[in-house]
Length: 107
Image (cartoon, rainbow, N blue to C red; front, side):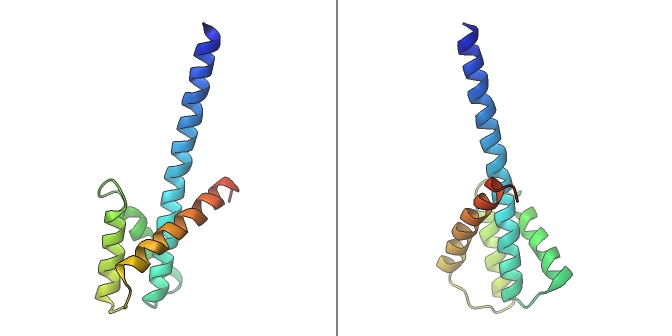
């Protein structure tokens, strides 16, 4: 029976590691998205970094990506940056792939 218990613990550990990596990847995606949007809004240096942090924090408002999307959409609109909803969501998807690759590569 201990073999089954060990297998169960191994699966639990792998699941926990995968969840932790996905959490990190989403946080990194949000930072990258913030930097992307900051560039579109003409923010540079510390202002761009501060904005990227705001986007990361926005993700804690509710489950899912809608809170992050609304933050970026609203800020781009406020700065009169023309950008479709589809393009923002596509950027979110592409940056999540990039973030996952970075996390798996240990960056």
